[in-house]
Length: 431
Image 1 (tube, one colour):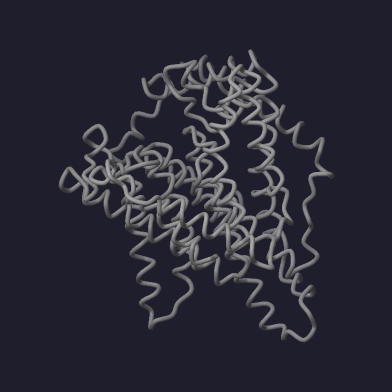
Image 2 (cartoon, rainbow, N blue to C red; image 1 turned 45 degrees about the vertical axis):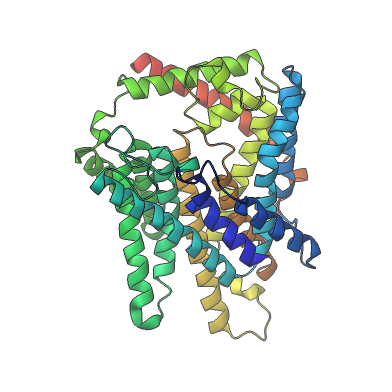
C-alpha cells in the first residue's frame, strides 16, 4: 500500500502523463492505477484508522459539492463532481492510513520534496533556455511553469513553499557522512530559486509567512513580527513583481473585483452556492481566492465544512506545539526517559514542519482558487496521520470530535464571511 502511494505521489507531482509529447497517446493511466492498487491493499489491510474529524468532513464536503449542482438545476453535474473529487478523497484516506510511522512520514515527505525539486530544476532550465525538457515554454515570457495542475507559475510556487519546510526538516536528520544534509540543503536552494523564478507575489508572501511561523516558535511573536517586516521589505526591493504590489495595479484589482463578485454570488445563493465548478461560468476570472471560491460555489454549508477541514489541521499542530517535555510522562515506564525525550522532540520538530507547510500552502492559496486541488488533501492526510500517531503515543493529547464542535465551526464560518466582506470593501475603497 505505502509503495503504491509513493508511486502515486510521484506521478501526481512529476506528471509525465501531461507532457505535450505524450498527451495524444498517454498510454495506461498509471496515476489512477497506482491509486486503485493502493486503495485495494488498504481495504485488505488490518489497520484502518478513522480517528480524526477530517475522515467525516471530506466525504461530507463531497456530498455538499454534489448537491450544490443538483439544487442549481444540473443533476448530472453531481456525478461529474463525484468522479472528479472521489479520487482525491481516496488518496486522502489511503495516505493518512499509510503514513502511520515517523519513518514512513519522512519517506513520504522526502518523495514530495524531491519531486518538487525536479520541477524547480525544470524551471531553472526553462529560465535558462526558454523551454524546459517537457517542451513547455515560459509563462508570459518571464515566469517559469510546468504541466498539468502546475501550468500556472503561482501553483508551482505554492508547491515549492509547501515543500521547503520538509526539506529543512530532512536536512537535520544527518547520516551518510554528512551527504544527507548536503543533499537536502541543495534541494532547499533549488526550491528557493524556483520560488523566485515563478515571480509570484503570493509565493513570496508565503515564504515570509513560513519564516514568520518558524521564528515565532523559536524566538517569540515579537521577533517574528520584526523579522517578517524586514523580510517583506527586502523582497519588495528585489527586481520582481513585488515592486508592483498595489491594490490599484491591474492584476491585483482584477483579483479584488473577482472576490467581490464571488461574495455577490454567495449572497444570491447563500445555502449551497452556485454549484461546484460554476464560478467561471458566472465571471470571466476565477475567484483567485480558495476561501471565496468555496463560499461562492458551495454556500455557507460547504464553506463551514471546508473551513473545519482546514481549521482542524492547524488546531492539531498547534495543540502539539503547546505541549512541553513533560508529555513524556504519557510514555510507558519501561521506555527510558532519554529515548522518550528524543522521540518527543523529533515528533515536535515534525509538527513544526507540517505547520509551516500548512502556512505556506494557505498563504499562497489565499490568492489562488485551489479549494479542491489534490495537493491540499494530500497535505491534510500527512497532518492527520501525524496527529493520529501522536495521539496514540501520547494519550493526553485531545481527541477532536465533531460532536463537540457542531456550533463552533458554523460560528467561525459566519465570522469568516463577514471578514471576507469587510476585507473586500476596504480594498475596493483603497483602490
